[in-house]
Image (cartoon, rainbow, N blue to C red; front, side, top):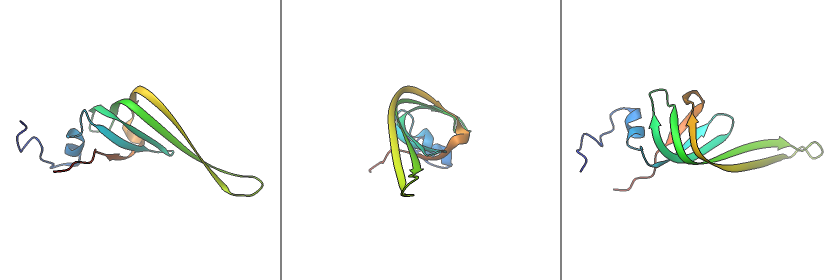
Length: 97
């Protein structure tokens, strides 16, 4: 059983530490989103994710009607190294007490 100190959140990276071996959501620059199992991370937010679903959103403008066309593409990746300087947001899994 985990001690109270093991589950305490004192610094922002503690929240990520508590999410090890759980599925997290990561938003990256250039309209990319990742959902995957967090295997490892460091203080720069470099991460190794497993069983990753990547969603890339692109917005194009129709030349004739000038309307925005939103396209999304999805792919799955077994393992992915995420470089920390591209990370905008990391969301841990929802926890209920």
